Image (cartoon, rainbow, N blue to C red; front, side):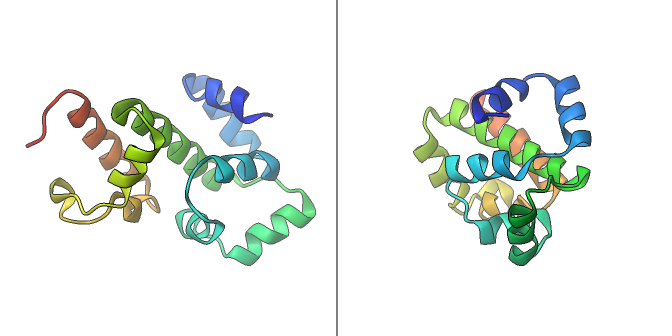
Length: 134
């Protein structure tokens, strides 16, 4: 699956359930990694896998398990929403790496290792989008 088809599926929850159950292919994951500013080391933290495990997945051309696939999808959806809210990838990435008072003065990128953290970020982006900053 190409990144273009994947991005189109991000808007269809039923397709996302199917995709997460099937598993994200390592080739698609590499395209996702290349489309954002996070390193494989950072992704390994987000997915609770070692870098070595990700390298092994690449060598064996494996797909990710359901839980890791869901996290990859959640982060990709967050990226899409962030680019939409901020108008550019660069502004969104700047926000992701800034300490945000509304999030307890932590950097949003530090929350990507948890579904709860990602949900917090989606909620915060919704508030920014609607001008509710307090």
